[in-house]
Length: 486
Ligand SMILES: Cc1cc2nc3c(=O)[nH]c(=O)nc-3n(C[C@H](O)[C@H](O)[C@H](O)COP(=O)(O)OP(=O)(O)OC[C@H]3O[C@@H](n4cnc5c(N)ncnc54)[C@H](O)[C@@H]3O)c2cc1C
Ligand code: SF4
Image 1 (cartoon, rainbow, N blue to C red):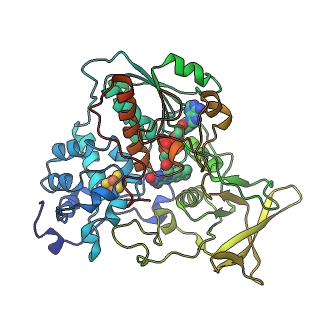
Image 2: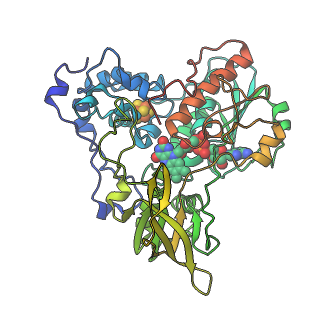
Image 3: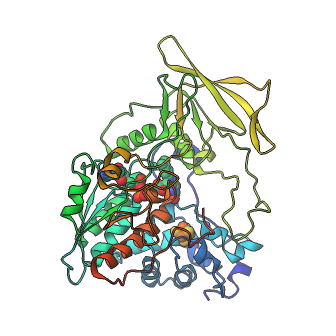
């Protein structure tokens, strides 16, 4: 146990963010660089090393949290990094972006603020990179087997790294021009600077993983042909079909899916564009959807110089404390103030968009909404509450409905889908087609980075067993194994 009295003597302290007015002028991460390190060992010392660490189960990766908290408390960063990497290929991604269901399951959280697990995680990995402790781990011998991974998001990268290290020759195919999936094109720079992806890719290249960008399987290479060329295939193609809002005026200029808007802002940061073709500059912006994708639109609009930003949510405002039906250690739905919300804008709950109004040139100008309430379990409009708000840019961030690969690789492989439109798989992440596996959002539906990494690792074990009859890769996490999480 790190510090037997740590939880009694030390209060919870989290990473400091830069002043909102300062950080909206740039795209760098919102945190004060170096602010965590002076406090993090004491924070790790708050861990009680419980007999039954519920945080393990809250984390889809089963991260060995009390073990690395202990090393972080003792400032043995190399040992902490080794323990962290035992279960997580990319802690710099999760340490920045994970909603930390582990902290909701922390035993200390029953009657005190939880241990800052996510901050400890990111400190360990940043220190490890800084100290040169993250090095390539190429396999000792090659198996002679080949694997194609389709998609380079966190699921594909985790599967590829595990399989390469197991000795298989792995090629990652990505239809975009850069590697990273939604980490690259979707998640804004201010949440995670892309340097973190780039140095992992370098590590993976040095281990032997091959990357092929701007190749879409199902279009540029026939899927069945790919299967014949490789001994096994992992599909990690994401779930990128955005949920639409088919109301009158949807076709007006200036109404876009969030995933049309956000990647263009990423492209500006990559240096491919000087200005985004869809910019919030000087406009009244309305973001429809109260989740994380919506918050990313809010933060992006602030940085582009929006005149105003309003985020709409159809559901009522969540509470600040757990509901009775979401007890510890489950992951509760709580009111969250993200860094984007700290920066400004207004959030409006319990409203539904009825239609958009445009000008004579077909550009959106107003959004009409009505208040809604639950009656007998059904959402109903409240008469007399209709109003309109200015809206010159509208982004739709209402979730995703599944894979966009129905006419491509799903058809060409002959894959079965499940009832929710995701690619169906068994407990080993195998699809109905021999030698074809699926991991991440493509099989699970739009979810979290931590789940994508967990599934990529698990699918890798399934592939390894398929290719060699056995596997020393870590045991799979099944989609239902760790149920405390979202
Ligand atoms: C805007 C936004 C913000 C988010 N923020 C967070 C967050 O803060 N924290 C969090 O935990 N989660 C977040 N998520 C969710 C998270 O990003 C995803 O759950 C995660 O990236 C899924 O990983 P994946 O590898 O399964 O798929 P993806 O990351 O979607 O990667 C799939 C890749 O496959 C490629 N591809 C698809 N089809 C083909 C093909 N036929 N051939 C070749 N390549 C193909 C795609 O181009 C893409 O690069 C966010 C999602 C969005 C949209
Ligand atoms: S990956 Fe997420 S759930 Fe797991 S320890 Fe890190 S922050 Fe917690």
